[in-house]
Image (cartoon, rainbow, N blue to C red; front, side, top):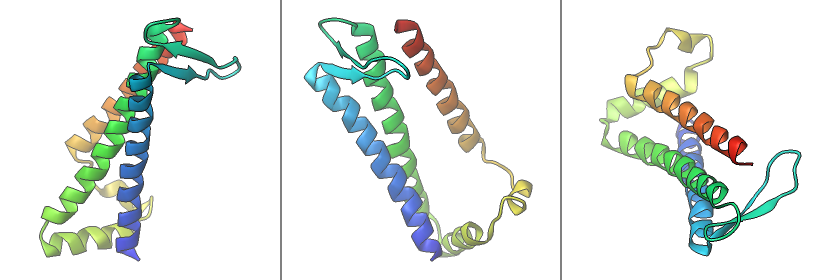
Length: 134
């Protein structure tokens, strides 16, 4: 059951990231994307037509966030595969038995903290561009 949880988390991140990246990449190849803002009518932004800045931020936003999710899935797979069998078993045991209250004593690795903070900052920069271009 523990391995299934790990597999579903990693596969979910990988496939979600791939879908998001390919959505942005397909729009970039076509030269247009439908932009939907909450409370407003959707409009089509084109690279060589109306709203080129909205096109660029929308497409690169999808591609960047999708690539980050896919990279997270790949890192999860690689980290699990290159670890020793005892480290794998410890990771699976930790995944199965950790509750929110128990996990507060564990230290967060610096790379995970930087990835989360970078993702949040990139997301808010992306939202700022989207809001100011409409």
